[in-house]
Length: 270
Image (tube, rainbow, N blue to C red; front, side, top):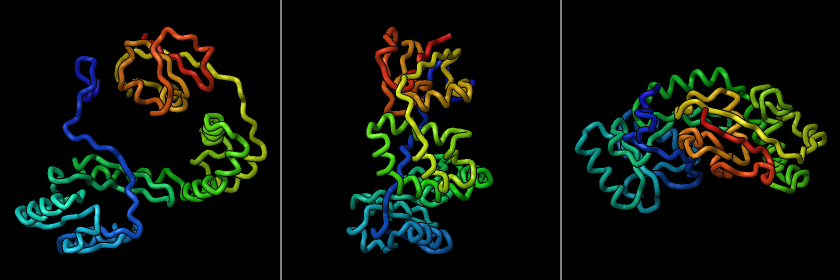
């Protein structure tokens, strides 16, 4: 059993992070320090459309990067910036950070961020390098085309749940818009013209043997991620239920599954 589980219950990590993408285009971001590290931070801010500025302009900013070698200077600068209400990232000092920087895989507008919550930037980098070989360059074009087709998708499927299910089918492995296959952007129009939404609900029964979500099969994890409704035994661990979509309806059994629409997963403990 992985270290994250002890006596059948998930342990709470000492460092908790909520992944967010912060829009900084046209906004000032404080960058404090000197040398190669601070130059890299400035490039990162500029690449995202932000405007690097000095600590003197902190009142115009919401984020700050501190890259100072001297620990006392770094701590003092961090405290000053935090006192002004800024969220601060401090190079090589995760204990002072309000946020950490992930390793970013860029398929604009698709961004894949890999974080270890400051534990090991090197590990995050090498995970990104592996994924670089797997994710096709065409991902960005597919995302852009789907954004452009949003109104057409709404016209075809006015109901939000039906629209999401249709897109799930299209983007699934082997589907017409499979993101791991090249040329998906060119197939969006044909998919919209041909797609017909199946209105019947789909009921899927699954059993799990442990409280560890890593023991889910690939099929179980995929179906949980697609489910509109999850009906489950009270004994199903929260960590397993968290593999379902955050907006999926959850109800404890017994329930009449027939009264729910969409993809309904009935999850029982073995």
